[in-house]
Image 1 (cartoon, protein in one colour):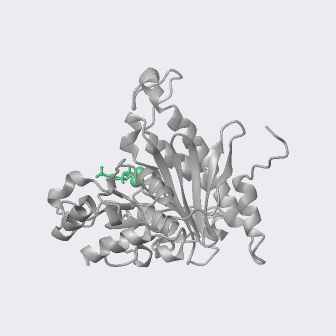
Image 2 (image 1 turned 45 degrees about the horizontal axis):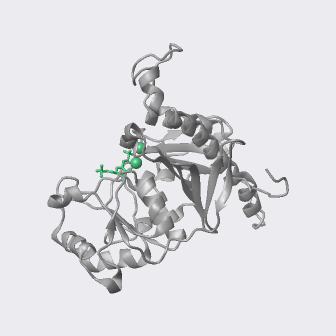
Image 3 (image 1 turned 180 degrees about the vertical axis):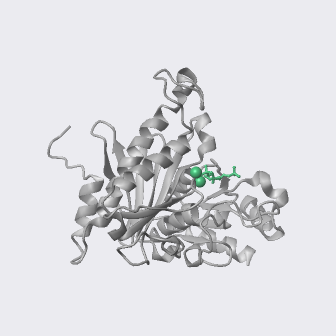
Length: 335
Ligand code: AHG
Ligand code: MN
Ligand code: MN
């Protein structure tokens, strides 16, 4: 490696960003570093997932005599334990827990931030070795310092997010994270175990040629949505139609492609899932924040996702998200 070629690590980058603000305390950088650390542990376990058949199936005992843990439970516990030990986290809410967890030690009750996450997204893809991910977002708490955080800290609009990101465990492992200053991507350099800046100031292309939806559910979709899907499949040279259809079934992987190549990702409501499937707090809010900071749009078909007032921790919402022009076109049909 050329010693003069400086790779900027996630830590160096966030410290550099913090220095641009006079009153910044660096707590957000510490939290991002801690989330990055948890995701490195998860990454290691995800890479070994294929060995489960050799070492013993889930629920069985492995060669070391340890109980095998389901990967999403493992990821959840790693994140909670790392954040519990973090110096700047008052509590967490996770897709895998029925309720939020308030950290009650002296230090945590005086911490300013709470973190919400989907510890492992796309977990049905583990068995087929396709990309999966971790999604997170960070809020400043609204409850008074000096006491454990409470539910009001977690039921905040997406607009209040301070930072959001995801880690994709793919052909390489990458963290993408967004603040009001922009969206940046860091690739894990396995030899040194650090996330290094690889995708600076990411922008979601204004228009795209790919739509992404579980089209197998079409018979349960609303007529207006069916019309829009017809539009995507029609021939029209001028607007590059028909669009290509791509659907991995991992929101992180589908949206990572959408962020880089442009496109439209949809998980609508249907007659079976009348509120949609994806969770507002752990999936739709953080992803909408990232895409909007990169110039795209995230909506439930009526309102911006980030404007929705949450009323419960595990609330679901329909979502249409991605390149600005493609989302606007979908809204022309849906409204
Ligand atoms: P999770 O693995 O966290 O439960 O999330 C799965 C989600 C999401 O990643 C993906 O976009 C969606 O489920 C796919 O759902 P369908 O299989 O219904 O298309
Ligand atoms: Mn998920
Ligand atoms: Mn999950």
